[in-house]
Structure formats: structure tokens, C-alpha cells
Image (tube, rainbow, N blue to C red; front, side):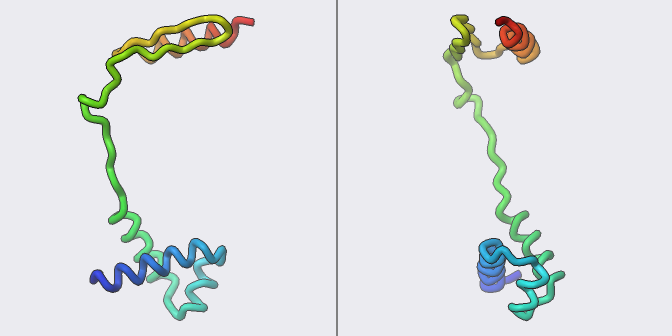
Amino acid sequence: MTKRKRLNWKELVAEHELSGKSVRAFCGEKGIAANSFYVNRKKLKIQDFVQIGVSKEEVRKEPIILTYRGLRIEIKPGFCKKTLHEVLSVVGDVE
């Protein structure tokens, strides 16, 4: 897919999303094959995919403080998610 074609497909895909029409109806009006639309839309989605992550420097170093119904829960970095889940389940059951 050349740069020019890619830009045109980006525009067509964006226009379709705003149109509220089915792919079949939209493609019929534009004179393009629905199969081509699906293939190129999929290619664009793959190309536009961005992987994100958290570097070690971005990891929180200070504890998180939760307050709920007068209780104060301090969650320190490296906490056990299972234990936190159990604590929150118990706290949620306390009336």
C-alpha cells in the first residue's frame, strides 16, 4: 500500500465511521468493493496499533492510601493483589 493510497483509505475509513452506514451501503455509494474496504481497514488498524508499557522508573514508589467507611488502608508498592482483593471483599461486607 503506497503512502497516497494509505492516506485515502484512512480518510475513507474515517468517513465511513462518521456516516453511520453499513460497510456495504457506504462502499456501494463510493464505488469500492466491500472486501477491499475490510482488508484495508484491517491493515490500517494493525499499522496504527501502539504498544504501551510502564518502565521501571515510572512505577509508583509511594504507598496508595484508600479510605472507605472510616477505614484507612495503606497499599505499599509490591503489594499482594490477592491479599488486597480479600481485604477489600471483607471491607465491602462490613456494614
